[in-house]
Amino acid sequence: MFKIVSKKSLNPTVTQMDIYAPLVAKKAQAGQFIILRVDEEGERIPLTVAGYSRDEGTIRIIFQIVGATTYKLNLKNEGEYIQDFVGPLGKATETENLKNVCIVGGGVGCAIALPIAQKLKRQGAKVTSIIGFRNKDLVILEDEFKACSDDVVVMTDDGSYGRQGNVCVPLNEYFANGEKFD
Image (cartoon, rainbow, N blue to C red; front, top):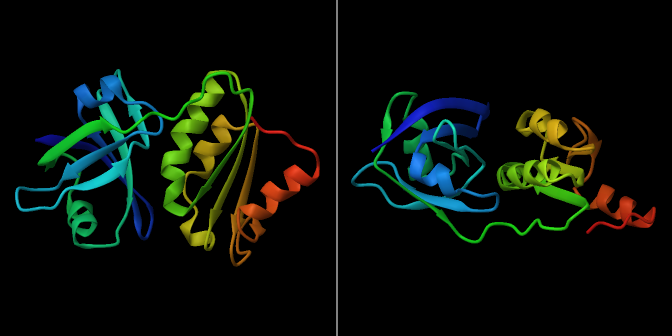
């Protein structure tokens, strides 16, 4: 069993949890994922490793409530337990020798983009982040991206926050202005 050490609602449909899983945290890297099962009867679902702390032995997951399993997971509170938590799985994102990068994420997909941006910044890369959402109420992780990026552009489809449009608009502007990302 794996303890939920923190739980935070990021918006009405997206939740962040830190799970105590020291063996997973010991080896986790940006770009990997875990598979969890909420309880003995539950199905297994994959979720992105949205962050980790080797010192605290925790893995951060961010999920959108879209079906029975994520609904059941969201009912769990700090101090409660998850049945199974397996990982890290998948190949870590390759970041070696990258000096000027653009990280692009949309909606809950920002959960996988953030640890990659953080790792690249720690390695000394210039990080430009473009994050997009349907509207202002769904914006997540903006402060976290600002903390690890040299430049952050926030886009909303409806223009209720940041700039209006999708993430391709500023990306194409960077290219049109001669920007060369690794």
